[in-house]
Length: 119
Length: 112
Image (cartoon, rainbow over the protein chains, first blue to last red):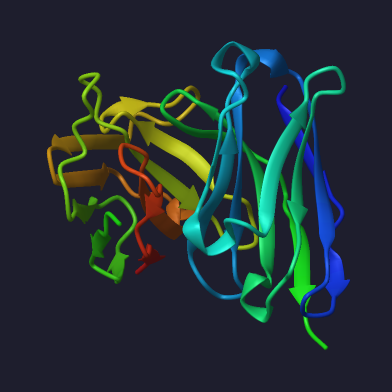
Protein backbone atom coordinates (compact mmCIF):
# COMPACT_ATOMS: atom_id res chain seq x y z
CA UNK A 1 0.00 0.00 0.00
CA UNK A 2 1.30 3.42 -0.98
CA UNK A 3 1.90 5.68 2.02
CA UNK A 4 2.96 9.31 1.98
CA UNK A 5 3.50 10.98 5.34
CA UNK A 6 4.20 14.71 5.39
CA UNK A 7 5.79 16.55 8.28
CA UNK A 8 7.50 19.81 9.11
CA UNK A 9 4.59 22.22 8.97
CA UNK A 10 3.90 24.78 11.64
CA UNK A 11 3.59 28.45 12.48
CA UNK A 12 6.30 30.69 11.05
CA UNK A 13 6.70 34.44 10.80
CA UNK A 14 6.72 36.23 7.45
CA UNK A 15 10.15 36.08 5.79
CA UNK A 16 10.91 32.95 7.79
CA UNK A 17 11.91 29.50 6.56
CA UNK A 18 10.55 26.00 6.87
CA UNK A 19 11.46 22.58 5.50
CA UNK A 20 8.70 20.12 4.70
CA UNK A 21 9.40 16.41 4.48
CA UNK A 22 7.49 13.55 2.92
CA UNK A 23 8.27 9.94 3.79
CA UNK A 24 7.20 7.54 1.06
CA UNK A 25 6.68 3.79 1.24
CA UNK A 26 4.85 0.96 -0.47
CA UNK A 27 6.11 1.59 -4.00
CA UNK A 28 9.33 1.87 -5.99
CA UNK A 29 10.15 5.43 -4.98
CA UNK A 30 13.09 5.70 -7.39
CA UNK A 31 10.81 5.15 -10.38
CA UNK A 32 8.34 7.99 -9.83
CA UNK A 33 8.35 11.74 -10.02
CA UNK A 34 7.07 13.47 -6.90
CA UNK A 35 5.19 16.70 -6.38
CA UNK A 36 3.90 19.13 -3.80
CA UNK A 37 0.39 20.55 -4.09
CA UNK A 38 -1.06 23.06 -1.64
CA UNK A 39 -4.50 24.18 -0.57
CA UNK A 40 -5.08 27.46 1.20
CA UNK A 41 -7.80 27.38 3.87
CA UNK A 42 -11.19 27.05 2.20
CA UNK A 43 -9.66 27.34 -1.26
CA UNK A 44 -8.85 25.12 -4.21
CA UNK A 45 -5.74 23.15 -5.15
CA UNK A 46 -2.53 24.71 -6.43
CA UNK A 47 0.41 22.79 -7.88
CA UNK A 48 3.65 24.00 -6.24
CA UNK A 49 6.58 21.93 -7.48
CA UNK A 50 7.63 18.63 -9.03
CA UNK A 51 10.85 16.65 -9.24
CA UNK A 52 11.63 13.93 -11.73
CA UNK A 53 13.67 10.77 -11.29
CA UNK A 54 17.39 10.04 -11.52
CA UNK A 55 17.29 9.00 -15.19
CA UNK A 56 15.76 12.40 -15.93
CA UNK A 57 18.48 14.16 -13.95
CA UNK A 58 16.15 15.01 -11.08
CA UNK A 59 14.74 17.88 -13.12
CA UNK A 60 12.63 20.26 -11.05
CA UNK A 61 9.72 22.54 -11.80
CA UNK A 62 8.23 25.24 -9.58
CA UNK A 63 5.21 27.50 -9.96
CA UNK A 64 6.28 31.10 -10.59
CA UNK A 65 4.91 32.38 -7.27
CA UNK A 66 7.45 30.27 -5.33
CA UNK A 67 10.45 30.38 -7.67
CA UNK A 68 13.58 31.78 -5.97
CA UNK A 69 11.93 31.01 -2.60
CA UNK A 70 11.02 27.29 -2.58
CA UNK A 71 13.09 24.31 -3.69
CA UNK A 72 11.93 20.73 -4.11
CA UNK A 73 14.45 17.94 -3.59
CA UNK A 74 14.50 14.21 -3.00
CA UNK A 75 16.65 11.55 -1.37
CA UNK A 76 16.13 8.24 -3.12
CA UNK A 77 18.19 6.37 -0.52
CA UNK A 78 15.68 7.40 2.16
CA UNK A 79 12.54 7.52 -0.04
CA UNK A 80 12.06 11.11 1.02
CA UNK A 81 10.98 14.24 -0.78
CA UNK A 82 11.43 17.72 0.63
CA UNK A 83 10.21 21.25 0.10
CA UNK A 84 12.60 23.91 1.32
CA UNK A 85 10.67 27.12 1.83
CA UNK A 86 12.36 30.49 2.34
CA UNK A 87 11.13 34.08 2.51
CA UNK A 88 7.67 32.85 3.42
CA UNK A 89 4.70 35.10 2.82
CA UNK A 90 1.27 35.13 4.42
CA UNK A 91 -0.16 33.91 1.10
CA UNK A 92 1.89 30.71 1.47
CA UNK A 93 -0.40 29.65 4.33
CA UNK A 94 -1.86 26.33 3.22
CA UNK A 95 -2.10 22.61 3.70
CA UNK A 96 0.78 21.12 1.73
CA UNK A 97 0.26 17.72 0.15
CA UNK A 98 2.95 15.38 -1.12
CA UNK A 99 1.92 13.42 -4.20
CA UNK A 100 3.21 10.65 -6.44
CA UNK A 101 3.19 11.65 -10.09
CA UNK A 102 2.08 8.56 -11.98
CA UNK A 103 -0.55 7.39 -14.42
CA UNK A 104 -0.66 10.84 -15.95
CA UNK A 105 -1.69 12.51 -12.73
CA UNK A 106 -1.24 12.79 -8.99
CA UNK A 107 -1.83 9.12 -8.28
CA UNK A 108 -1.46 9.15 -4.50
CA UNK A 109 -1.68 11.89 -1.89
CA UNK A 110 -0.57 12.22 1.69
CA UNK A 111 -2.72 13.71 4.45
CA UNK A 112 -0.91 17.02 4.25
CA UNK A 113 1.02 19.24 6.63
CA UNK A 114 -0.25 22.68 7.58
CA UNK A 115 1.93 25.73 7.13
CA UNK A 116 0.76 28.95 8.73
CA UNK A 117 2.64 32.16 8.00
CA UNK A 118 1.67 34.88 10.45
CA UNK A 119 3.20 37.37 12.82
CA UNK B 1 -0.90 30.23 -17.91
CA UNK B 2 -3.54 27.73 -18.98
CA UNK B 3 -6.81 28.60 -17.29
CA UNK B 4 -9.03 25.66 -16.39
CA UNK B 5 -12.69 26.66 -16.19
CA UNK B 6 -15.03 24.25 -14.46
CA UNK B 7 -18.80 24.41 -14.68
CA UNK B 8 -21.01 24.37 -12.83
CA UNK B 9 -19.50 25.75 -9.64
CA UNK B 10 -21.89 23.56 -7.69
CA UNK B 11 -24.64 21.09 -8.41
CA UNK B 12 -27.17 19.11 -6.47
CA UNK B 13 -28.14 15.70 -7.78
CA UNK B 14 -30.47 13.02 -6.43
CA UNK B 15 -29.15 9.62 -5.46
CA UNK B 16 -29.24 7.23 -8.39
CA UNK B 17 -29.14 9.99 -10.98
CA UNK B 18 -26.25 11.18 -13.16
CA UNK B 19 -23.99 14.19 -12.64
CA UNK B 20 -21.93 15.86 -15.32
CA UNK B 21 -19.07 18.32 -14.82
CA UNK B 22 -17.39 20.31 -17.55
CA UNK B 23 -13.79 21.48 -17.67
CA UNK B 24 -12.56 23.81 -20.40
CA UNK B 25 -8.95 24.79 -20.89
CA UNK B 26 -7.76 28.06 -22.43
CA UNK B 27 -5.34 26.11 -24.65
CA UNK B 28 -5.41 22.67 -26.20
CA UNK B 29 -4.15 20.01 -23.79
CA UNK B 30 -2.87 17.76 -26.58
CA UNK B 31 0.83 17.33 -25.87
CA UNK B 32 3.47 16.96 -28.56
CA UNK B 33 3.89 13.35 -27.43
CA UNK B 34 0.29 12.63 -28.41
CA UNK B 35 -1.09 12.40 -24.89
CA UNK B 36 -3.70 14.66 -23.36
CA UNK B 37 -2.65 15.34 -19.79
CA UNK B 38 -5.99 16.03 -18.19
CA UNK B 39 -6.94 14.37 -14.93
CA UNK B 40 -9.89 14.50 -12.52
CA UNK B 41 -9.86 14.36 -8.73
CA UNK B 42 -12.43 14.05 -5.96
CA UNK B 43 -11.86 15.65 -2.58
CA UNK B 44 -14.34 14.33 -0.06
CA UNK B 45 -15.05 16.52 2.99
CA UNK B 46 -12.08 16.47 5.35
CA UNK B 47 -10.03 14.20 3.11
CA UNK B 48 -7.13 14.44 0.70
CA UNK B 49 -7.94 14.49 -3.01
CA UNK B 50 -7.93 11.23 -4.91
CA UNK B 51 -7.28 10.53 -8.56
CA UNK B 52 -10.30 9.37 -10.54
CA UNK B 53 -9.44 9.79 -14.22
CA UNK B 54 -6.12 10.31 -16.00
CA UNK B 55 -5.20 11.08 -19.60
CA UNK B 56 -8.73 12.45 -20.03
CA UNK B 57 -10.55 9.14 -20.16
CA UNK B 58 -8.67 6.45 -18.25
CA UNK B 59 -10.14 5.28 -14.99
CA UNK B 60 -7.56 5.00 -12.21
CA UNK B 61 -7.06 1.69 -10.44
CA UNK B 62 -9.85 0.91 -8.00
CA UNK B 63 -12.15 3.70 -9.21
CA UNK B 64 -15.76 2.72 -9.75
CA UNK B 65 -16.91 2.31 -13.36
CA UNK B 66 -19.65 4.80 -12.51
CA UNK B 67 -17.01 7.47 -13.19
CA UNK B 68 -16.14 8.23 -16.79
CA UNK B 69 -14.08 10.92 -18.47
CA UNK B 70 -14.26 12.15 -22.01
CA UNK B 71 -13.16 15.00 -24.20
CA UNK B 72 -10.23 16.26 -26.19
CA UNK B 73 -8.46 19.47 -27.07
CA UNK B 74 -9.98 22.07 -24.77
CA UNK B 75 -13.30 20.51 -23.73
CA UNK B 76 -13.58 17.75 -21.16
CA UNK B 77 -16.36 16.13 -19.17
CA UNK B 78 -16.58 13.99 -16.07
CA UNK B 79 -19.74 11.94 -15.69
CA UNK B 80 -20.83 10.18 -12.54
CA UNK B 81 -23.66 7.73 -13.03
CA UNK B 82 -25.97 6.19 -10.43
CA UNK B 83 -24.97 8.71 -7.80
CA UNK B 84 -24.13 7.31 -4.36
CA UNK B 85 -23.74 9.15 -1.03
CA UNK B 86 -19.93 8.78 -1.06
CA UNK B 87 -19.72 10.75 -4.31
CA UNK B 88 -20.31 14.06 -2.56
CA UNK B 89 -17.36 16.41 -2.41
CA UNK B 90 -15.44 18.76 -4.64
CA UNK B 91 -14.24 17.66 -8.06
CA UNK B 92 -11.19 19.21 -9.68
CA UNK B 93 -9.73 18.94 -13.15
CA UNK B 94 -6.00 19.37 -13.65
CA UNK B 95 -3.73 19.82 -16.64
CA UNK B 96 -0.05 19.00 -16.91
CA UNK B 97 0.50 19.56 -20.58
CA UNK B 98 1.65 23.14 -20.17
CA UNK B 99 3.69 24.92 -17.53
CA UNK B 100 2.70 25.96 -15.00
CA UNK B 101 0.53 22.98 -14.17
CA UNK B 102 -2.94 24.18 -13.24
CA UNK B 103 -6.09 23.00 -11.52
CA UNK B 104 -9.65 24.03 -12.16
CA UNK B 105 -11.37 25.94 -9.37
CA UNK B 106 -13.53 22.99 -8.42
CA UNK B 107 -17.14 21.84 -8.64
CA UNK B 108 -18.99 21.07 -5.44
CA UNK B 109 -21.33 18.10 -5.75
CA UNK B 110 -24.11 17.85 -3.22
CA UNK B 111 -26.61 15.07 -2.84
CA UNK B 112 -30.18 16.24 -3.17
